[in-house]
Each structure stands twice: as structure tokens, then as C-alpha cells.
Length: 126
Figure (cartoon, one colour):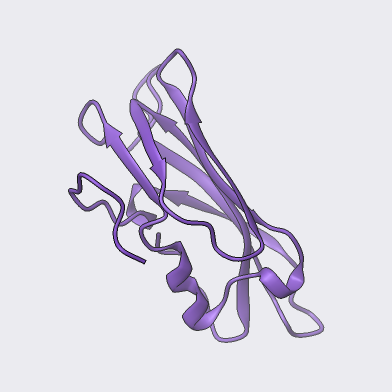
């Protein structure tokens, strides 16, 4: 997962709504994070994570902890945008904050470009 951060910023949570994606596995859990993933009986699903407290927010080199987080299988092509009543394959948000006195948390939009999709049959080695 790729979430652009500037120096002094962190990620405290993310959530992707999915469409046409089977979640095969949650491959690992960043320390102090709660992860939720799955799909309903319909084509909609979710990939999301949330830090439990400030010390577990991810910034700098710790952003690597989001790599290889999920093993998923899209069962259609990657749809980049909503088309009529069919939503994009991946669409979501992340909460970005900063450590300075005026760095309030804000939501940014995420899409397929924030995910590094790599063909795989199993979770990557830690």
C-alpha cells in the first residue's frame, strides 16, 4: 500500500471499499493495528486498518509495514472509476496527521493507485 506522506506526517487509519475482490488472507498485522478484511455474499467488501493509539501510527520507514498486507483476488478486471451503478474496484480514504502543533488530522482519498497489486499465490515472507 502506498500512502503519500511528508516529513512529520503519519497514517492512523485507512479504509478501502472493494468491488469484485475476494480476500484470501490478511498476511500480517502491523504492531498495534486492528485489521478487517472480507467480502459480503455480494460483490462488495472492505480492506481496512486502524492504529490503536498514537505510538502505533505509521510514518517514515514504518510505512513499509503496510506492504504485502493483504492477499486478494480480483475476479474481474480492475475498474478504475465508478461506472454507473458499478463502483470502482478499490476506493477509500486514509487519515493523515502530523506531529506539529498545527497538523490536524485530515482524510485523503485513496484508489487503485494506492495499492501495489502483485501476482501471488501466497503471502510474502515477512
